[in-house]
Structure formats: structure tokens, C-alpha cells
Amino acid sequence: MRRISIFGATGSVGANCVDLIQREMGSGAFQVVALTGGRNIARLAQMARDLQAQIAVTAHDDLLGQLRDALAGSGVEAAAGPAALIEAAQRPADWVLSAIVGAAGLAPGLASLRRGNILALANKESLVCAGPLLRNAAAGQSATILPVDSEHSAVFQALGGENIDSVKSVTITASGGAFRDWPLERLAAATVAEASTHPNWAMGQRITIDSASMFNKALEVIEAKELFGLRPDQIKVIVHPESIIHAMVSHIDGGTIAHMGAPDMRHAIGYALNWPNRGVLPVADLDLAALGRLTFREPDETRWPALRLAREVMQAGGMAGAVFNAAKEQALDDFIAGRMAFTDMAPRVESTLSALSAQSGFSADPHDLDTVLQWDRAARQEAAI
Ligand SMILES: NC(=O)C1=CN([C@@H]2O[C@H](COP(=O)(O)OP(=O)(O)OC[C@H]3O[C@@H](n4cnc5c(N)ncnc54)[C@H](OP(=O)(O)O)[C@@H]3O)[C@@H](O)[C@H]2O)C=CC1
Ligand SMILES: CC(=O)[C@@H](O)[C@H](O)COP(=O)(O)O
Ligand SMILES: [Mn+2]
Image (cartoon, rainbow, N blue to C red; front, top):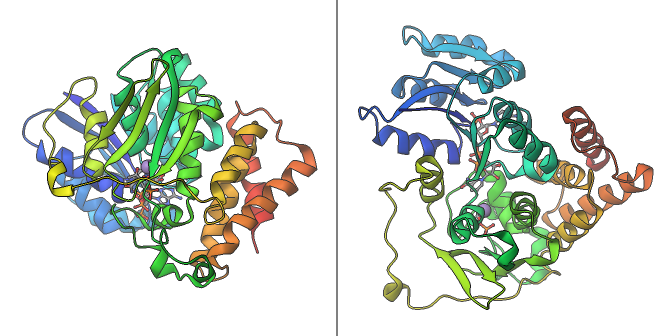
């Protein structure tokens, strides 16, 4: 029996995980400790009831009353606010899913690693902001970070525990997102609704827009560096519109191992949930003959400047990742609110990186949570319109 907690249970990744757990209810395989959410109180309470969680936590203090009412008579504890999220992360558990969106996922994920749990990490932003902090926390407690992001789960599986020294390069695939085939001159007028439609994956709105701008892939390149200890020049991106191959690991002996599967996050989540074993998952089998062919193309960095920015961020090191992510989150907020054009997001992130680098370089200590959060705040302020 595995004790599990899900941070960001009400989101797209969280709900996929809840779906997998629900299918096992009654088998005694899992005991649910904590489920957390944000504003979707009805969904959080229903999940907590269905999974008989010990505690349900909303990130928002002002929603505690609503959550308590929704859980009345269920026996599930209710709590609210950032401190309650940390307290939930510190509860004894064997496996914790980090699926809050954005840098807000960093502190609970860190608290969970410091408790020595297995952290199944969908929240790529925390590695981009504070990779060394998380890696140190994991090493100090003999805790494990398991990738849940589909490309990184694919790399992990393709590596199969082999020595990273035998790896020549790692290629992660990019669908190209909503605007892959749009004429460049149309992009400035792209609407939020248009950017919020993904060709292959069903995901939350923020990551879907990040796929269209390729900021998602930019974050993932940095995530790959932090997770696998790769040099920046070893990490490649290729546009693969079908999203069937998720990543490829190329070895020094000329062999390349590709990981393939239907674009369904329940594979990567379920792989982490069953690790180090494998279990049957509700994921469609591949039918390659029906697919007919798989296609690939080089990413065009005029269309997707975020990829160049990711390389510059890795080169700069230190707090550049935290600034990059925070500026991107702010620009995304402004795009979603209608204050910024789609094509202004990357220039805004670039100018924020330049401004903060000019002030003090990026050389602060990335091993300290408060310092990371200070840089995050400064970057949001600088990036805001
Ligand atoms: N969706 C996908 O398939 C994939 C997602 N990822 C990564 O996984 C993470 C989650 O993505 P996704 O599921 O799409 O996101 P969603 O927007 O669907 O869900 C986000 C979750 O985080 C909660 N939340 C939002 N803001 C806060 C906050 N400030 N504090 C605490 N909780 C908060 C939401 O609560 P509520 O909705 O109740 O307000 C919800 O539970 C992201 O880091 C993303 O990059 C990685 C690979 C694939
Ligand atoms: C499912 C997943 O892992 C997403 O991060 C996905 O990769 C997004 O698709 P893009 O390749 O369009 O960014
Ligand atoms: Mn991904």
C-alpha cells in the first residue's frame, strides 16, 4: 500500500492522476493523504470524498469556509493557504505528485523532498527556477525526483538506468503548438482562444499557450539539463507534429533509443506511479500502420525565439532560470488578460533578463528558497506592463 498526495489535483495532470487512482480504488494499492487545489473547490471536495483523502487543501485562505462546507460530513480535513500547503507536503507519504502550475509549485515540492518522499514532478517550473535547490534537497534525504513531463519521462525510460556518460545527446520533440503552420505575419494578432488549442494534447490553458509560443519547450530544455545533468549542447529540440515520439536518447556508439506512445499523460503519470515496476494503464496502443508516417522538422527560431532564450539562460546560469520563468509567467498573464500581443511575450522576457542581469548579474545563491523567490518577484515586477 502506497501513501500518496497530489498537489494540483484539480488541474489537468492532477485529474489524470486521480483517474488512475480511482481505477484502483478497492484494491488497497493506495491510501490518499493530501489533495490540493486552487479555486475549484467543488472539484477538490468531490475528489477528496471519492478518494477518501485525509486532508484537502486550497491554496487560497479566503476559500476555507467554502471548502469546509463542501466537505461537511465526509471526515476529510479542510485547510487553506500557502502554509497549509507546506504542512500537507510534510505529512508522511511515499509518493507525491507535484502538479501545481507555475513557480507556486516550488515551495510545496521542496518541502516534500525534504520529507524524503518520492516526488513525481510535472511542475517543470520549479526545476527551471531552482534546479540545484531541489537536487540538493533530494540528495540530502535520499529522496527521488521522477520526471512526469512526457518528454522527460521518455528520456528517463529510454535511458533505462544507463550511465549518462554514454549519452551523446538527448532530443526532445515539440508538436509546434497551435501556430506551427501559421504565416509569421498572422502571429501578432493571435487570440487567447486560438493559442489555447493544442493540436495533440489535452492540457491546462497556460501550458497550452506555452506550447504555441514554444516557451514550454524552452522550459523543458532547461528541465532536461537539471534532471539529467546534461550539458546544454547535448540537448536538442525537433518539431514532430504527430507527438508520437516523445524523446530520443543518442549514445556514443551511434545508437538512438526513441520512446513512443499515444499523446496521453496517463502514461507518464502512471509510469511514475508504478515505478520501479510497470502496470497496465488505460492508454491506447500505438497503431503505426494506421499512422502511416512520422514527420520531423528543425525548429524555426524566428517563429519561436523562446528556444534561443533558453540557451542564453543556461549559459548565464545562477538565477537566470528563475528570472526567465517569472518573466514568462508575467507575460503570459498579460497575454491572457488581453494586455499584450502574443508576439510581445518573448521580447518582454528577453528585456527582463537583460534588465535584471545588468543590475546585478545572475550570480546569487540558487540553493536558498527565499533568494529564488525574491528574484522571482523582482522579475515579475520588471516584466509587468
Ligand atoms: N497538462 C499537462 O498535460 C502537462 C502539464 N505539465 C506541467 O504540470 C503542471 C500542471 O499543469 P496543468 O495540469 O496543465 O495545469 P492546470 O492549470 O490544469 O492545473 C493547475 C493546478 O494548480 C492549481 N493552482 C493554480 N494556481 C495555484 C497556486 N497559485 N497555488 C497552488 N495551486 C495552484 C490549480 O487549482 P485550481 O484549478 O483549483 O484553481 C490546479 O489544481 C505545470 O507545471 C505544467 O507545466 C507537464 C506536462 C504535461
Ligand atoms: C504532454 C507534455 O509533456 C507537454 O509538455 C507537451 O509536450 C506539450 O506539447 P508541445 O510539444 O506542443 O510543447
Ligand atoms: Mn512536455
